[in-house]
Length: 408
Image 1: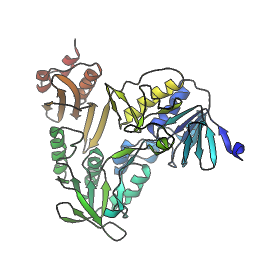
Image 2 (image 1 turned 90 degrees about the vertical axis):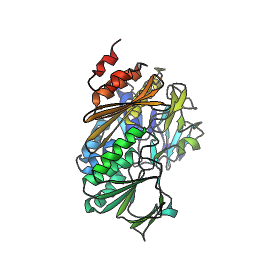
Image 3 (image 1 turned 135 degrees about the vertical axis):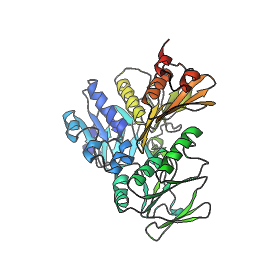
Image 4 (image 1 turned 180 degrees about the vertical axis):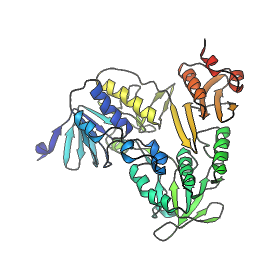
């Protein structure tokens, strides 16, 4: 029975998100002729996640535009796309994975399992109807009717996901209250100046932001109808959105004995502690400038997956990350280049509707937050990638041509 249910597959990819799809596509683009199997838990083809909390939730993007490729693309490329499938075990010694009673063998295995949202405990109302996360297409489809009905929404968490959801809710005419347990929104990821900018932006659109205030519990019988905050105040609400971070999806890897370290630990080429098992995307941590990091971004998922695909085919290429991120809120496009960890100084460039915050450690440029300022973003990104800095005098003068910084 075991032999009859055992199928051969050259490269198996677990996780059909941005990283998994990019890896499969790159393998074919580089001429790999063996079997490629891409396995996803969701019932839909690989899709973009960033628009879920922006254009798709607003109703400005149709479902088919979310898909990275049309369904028939995978057939044409001879990529076996296995949807609505749950991988139950990985056996690294046998080079097999199990999907229920079915067993697949692999020459190489890629773990692109992504991440999952932190959820509220049931003890404080996290499992009530009307409590949503913003991670998957199913999550957003589930909350869409609540947005159409209007009313009062409580957003729990003042990171980028929470702020994007708040912006969409306000744009659709809902009453919005956002609570952030830390002293300020974006405290974990941005400087005070960026927090101040987005707080003012949201408040100008009617969003009520409560900082230094946590959630005590959600209330209701079956459906959420209220919230008790840590300051003792009670709110009547129609639904709640939880945006308190994500966790790398590492359960399969851990059960298989693959080493974890802030996600699935990889070397500079994307290889895990098991020689023919690789990882890329949100779930993977990797060496970066003398430390180990994990990047939760679309650019990282794509770039890292492409390097892993090449290395599966023998390229022996190091992955050199160039971190960048973006967010859209109320018509403001935020573009972030670099990582701001360890900054000591902030230089502000303000030229009307365009504004940017430049992060320095002493004289070294680390990162930039650019709000409706694509030129500042582009210049800073190129400088950071080249290991160069920027003269603060030029940065702070709104009349200066930033391209001067790229000369020499």
